[in-house]
Image (cartoon, rainbow, N blue to C red):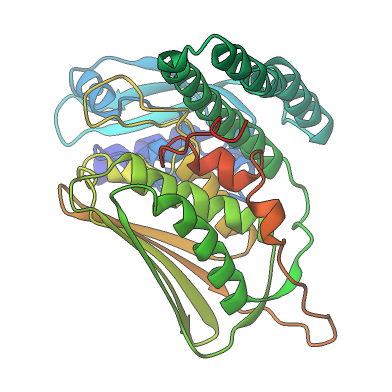
Length: 373
């Protein structure tokens, strides 16, 4: 393989276009100076981290047959498109990725425009549709059309599915455009996790999935962004509810690990195939165990990774097909003693019908959102 790598380095080292070299398993081998500059704030371990690859297996087959292609670059780099081509006439071959069309980085102003557009064109109309279910319910009651409630319930579920997707879309662009570390608050992590998990259990408890949580006794005081970390946890629990199996159990744990603390979310659900696992944190990558092209927007785990990295932590996923999945978030303990401890949001806010908790868990937990309208 060395005889393939050295000529590529010699040819592209001084090239002004970002150039990446991967092995046949799509793991990064080398990048030139332009590529290093473009991705200096990101962790690029594989081709899937660099480009949007909804079906990596098909791309590998195409490359192994000697064919090149054009793919879209990851939005986190503000990149346009890459030319992907095989290097070598027989296996093991290498994969060359060259940025061929650069897109300007999306600054805060552009992201604000995207967020405003998504909110105006999608989220707000869906809110309005859901709010109209109350008057429709009263009309049905007037004519004693109780059998038609099921149609309102179905509309309510679809509203929350759309609101969850748009919330993830908005959050992804907002978090991705942050030029500085978000404002952190000094929080008692034991209380934060206790309150968050109790709220989650009030939703998951309405399903046939067992939900438990285990909070360590040793006090952990750290600086976090509570709303972001809550969204990460809601996404993880939502995934565990969506990809479920009979007898599924979800366990959330908080443990102290030296100067860090670890939040673990484990389940006994469907699990994730080995060939899919390397791609689950890639933005817009979506896997459906039933074989459909996609099961959602493909941003849930990408947002989890964003949130953890904004807290200067790391995340790890392990999974076994038909046995379950474990996601571990390892975060540093950061405590400036001169800051006061901030209490997390009250339960009235958390249980509001349009709070993040409702948006992320209502439909996957079978909550009838029109029952109190």
